[in-house]
Length: 359
Image (cartoon, rainbow, N blue to C red; front, side, top):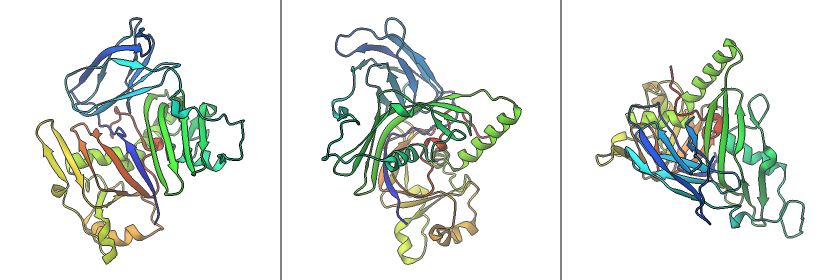
């Protein structure tokens, strides 16, 4: 099996709204002249929670849980900024200065000015990007891209694909009933070593169903997607109930001996009394199998054949050596390092906003 390596910087994975909250206030200004910026967009990444700055550039936003969150700041004509709240506190003061224009590293040769020294991207590169971002190919019945013409592509002579967008990428998820605004800070894929890294944050708005039938279809699809999602896994890991929620961790290195070793969660998780977080320390690669139904003793007994069987359809990932901190509400901080072996659960097609609760 060969998968792609992903380095996902602080991908926000969140849990249902808890009583604990954090309030963030501050002022947004132009970095060059300190002029107040009104009507700037501010949202909590991965949620439906957003606001706008007033005439003086001031804003207040309440984030829904006691964990590590990211706040996105955007204004037309300025570079978007993403700030991470590393440790939960009741109140945060966050003043933001936005820079005008496109980052210098993204001022590239326009697409129309072809040059023999430049390796120009093709449709396969465009398709590759959308699949990695969405977890599926875009379509008018599934995940529809409303402004694809705003997304820029560049493939250099070293076979590195760079993708960026100067405004939100707008997406409608017709299958689950969400309008998504995605702040794409950067995307790169190195074809030579099959490594992908990207950094961006979604903001969700729930659509209004046309009728009860559409509402039921959306609810059914959301439940199906959630059962396989990385969000569900993170919550189950914090509660130490991964088998009950349909997930199995297994030591990848044991595969060479034609067997599977199931690690003890107590050897992976360490309580952090200082900020109520739990440290997840993975020292050797682990398979993550997502079954969407409780893992039984029989499943564990047959896990070796299930994992190596290419005909299986459940998502299979490899968690690479890394360290994360997860919090009571399911958010986490750190650099997520995974390899996808079978199907993808990291794209927007597998993401739900913070308010979603499985019924």
